[in-house]
Amino acid sequence: MTPEPISAVPPEPQGMGEFSRLTGVLLEPTKAFEDIARRPTWLVPFLLVIAAGLAYITLFGQHVTWQRFFQHQMENPTVAARMAQMPPEQRERTLQMQVKFAGIGAGVAIVFFTLIALLVSSAIALVAVNAMGAALRFKQIFGILAYAALPIVVRYVLSIVVMFLKNPDDFNMQNPLAFNAAAFMDPINGSKFLYTLFVTLDVFAIWSMFLGATGVKAAAGKRLTFGGAFFAVALPTVLFALLASTVAGLTS
Image 1 (cartoon, one colour):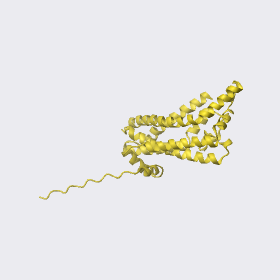
Image 2 (cartoon, helix red, strand yellow):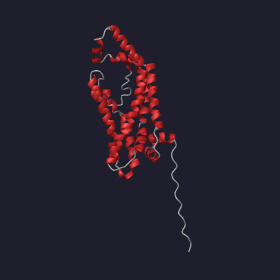
Image 3 (cartoon, helix red, strand yellow):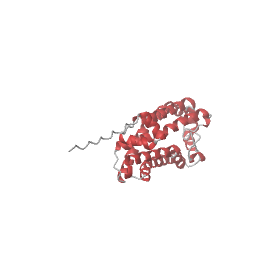
Image 4 (cartoon, one colour):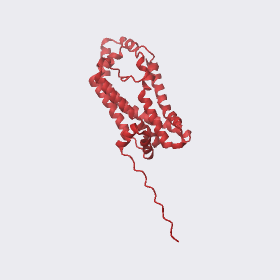
């Protein structure tokens, strides 16, 4: 009696390198996110987003300058009325203080809010995904959303290019690319709520949501539809956009 041959165990697929992941998310997202779901990481895409944001803020301060930015802010009737109530000396001191600390404050805000947004978005998406029966882990969702944020790097890079192509007086820091409905609105006299909402939900935000949904679907497999994955990823993005728009509307 001859022993039955032992079937060979198929080798595990070799993981993708970091560069392959980064390019794959933009070119072959399903394949890249399947690898990210198997071996979740997040630090490299997170640092890329931070580095691109800090480069944008630094170059803005050097080329457009914060002095010009705050002078344009004074065209807002609410800001102008508030500043008009100050004595000239106090108004000048306030402007100089804003200019002095704006770059540092903007840089800290990019790091802090990027991390907080990623953590909170991952938590909300995880609850939504698990409620639909997909049973993914937080680390998987966190890694997927970190890589899905790569379109933000593209947005920063294009914003820097536009910054140097346009006259500094015409550069709109809040909406430099105008890949959204806010491009057709008056940023000074129009609705601050709608303007901020449309700026936040631009082409790049929608691109990130589709990438995130692709990643969640790749991780969950048949346990989740693409529509369910998109809902789970889009939910925190829409909530953040509504919160930012509400704050803008109330403080304008």
